Amino acid sequence: MNARVAILTFPGSNSEDETLRACTDAGIAAEIVHWTAGVDEVRAFDGYVLPGGFAYEDRVRAGAVAAHDRLMEAVREGAERGKLVLGICNGAQILLEAGLAPGLPAAGASPARPQAVFTRNAQRAFLCRFVHVLLTAPPERCAFTARLPAGTVIPMWASHGEGRLAAVPEVLERIDSGEHAVFCYADAAGNAIAAPNGSALDAAALTNVKGNVLAIMPHAERSAWAYQSCTPAERARYRGDTAAMLAPAGGNVLFQAFAHALAAI
Amino acid sequence: MNTASTATGHIAAAIVLTIPDNQARTAYSTLRRLGLAIGGLRRADVIVLEDPAELGAFEAAVRQNEALFNENTHDLWAGPLEAPSPGELWIIDDRPERFVIGKLGHAVRFAGWRLEDAAGNPAAGEHLDEAARLLLCNPAVQRRILHVHDLPRGEYSAR
Image 1 (tube, rainbow over the protein chains, first blue to last red):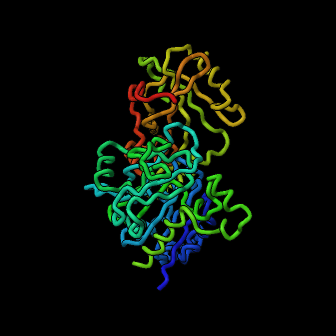
Image 2: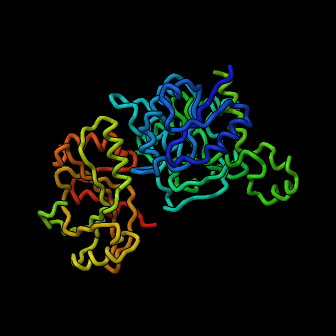
Image 3: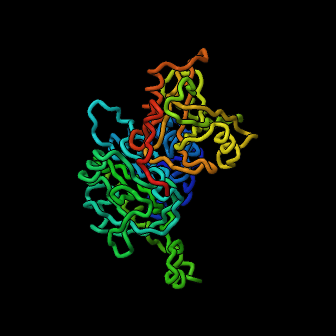
């Protein structure tokens, strides 16, 4: 059976087309699902992607209103049953506001309560920069990284005003000790660097306890083909060569890993 | 806003949209869908001056700040600030941005929500607690202000 993935859009979402193309190129049977879809229709999918953008204009807080959208009932149920859920940028903010990542066990607390948040960058400015993320957790910690070599470095575009991981100290300690921060910011050689947005633990992505939910701030779908690289040398190499420009690159490996993980469930 | 006391010496301006407030409307409909029985919700940007100043000068400075106030779309109330009035929920970020108001000094901003019951009266305290818990306050980065003394003065840096 070919697993079907829903790319859920809310009013204000963007990047869903690039996300769809990145999924499709990796062999994932994905389709864009509008927020007017029925919850049962969404429940029928085998995995979910929440793309970037500004769902509900980021009213109240980034991702806060979308986290309570009725379609998130299906995502929450699916996550609890082990379905794969990927949130990119605003999608990552939604997953944290929904409490799906890091999803730490909390006695007596509602599972829907946020425990951490991707909030305003430390520099209080929008960050638009080509970055690299380093797989710092053991690959098997998260379903999305299980097929990646340890220490994998993936180039991506960071494009956010609110990408700084923040939580109270006890939660940050549990995020750290539980290896929830599967990707951290690094240089191109894979050396860990200080997060360009001041993110706690220099984290670029969080997973949940079971490892089937991944909330990642930089955009893998915007570095999935060679032409999207910002390296002048690479641009020069590909200039005029359409096939080389459209070759899989960078963030494509994350979607390939997603496809492998879907095939394994 | 509670103007009963000036004991703290804090003065503030509450800025409210006079055109439809999409953020308040969305928060209202979300809270209703989550089961909170409220009849209305309004939102104000509350600007609190950290330094002593004359109220009239402060109000004039806020009115002249185009990043904060537009007379075509906003109403403004200015006065001494003490604690939330009944039905009010004050939520501030843990690291609020400090900014300069004219030549009067630094100020911080927080969200002032006013919840009403179906009859238009201030919402009950338990409804405020529930609204904060469900949507309006993320405890990872925000906190509820119960008195102006709770403002995180000096705990953050201006960048």
